Image (cartoon, rainbow, N blue to C red; front, side, top):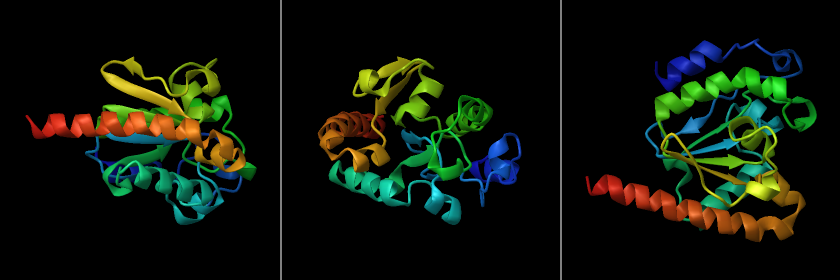
Length: 190
């Protein structure tokens, strides 16, 4: 299966209640399907739902600025969300919604095979790392599982509401940048 086939399979998904709660379309993800780096957010917002692309609203614009400052070209990585449909009012996805969508995310992992996964916010951190994880306690630390390194960090929407936290996120993205470029250099040397 390819990412295009994955999209075609789920573009009319009705497995959880989100499909009937005002979504316009399923937002699977976008970017380089061969990237060693994947970013996983919480869920599409209004702009993402309208355009069918992840992280294109205000939080996405901030994420693009962070990536640019870290010298990580956005088009060279893969970006997706833990849930593929917009939660009403941009609320945090419910555990049941995340558990319904996580099998789509696992299929994305299998197709892309990233070595580094950045978890943007508490929802993907709880869904992937530990349901009891607190983003403020685990952010900025690499967690390794089955040869894949996960970095929980603050969601760009949180940074828009709490600008003083940007320094913590920047510290995380410096680590992400360093690990990303080490991977790229390792691939060049093989």
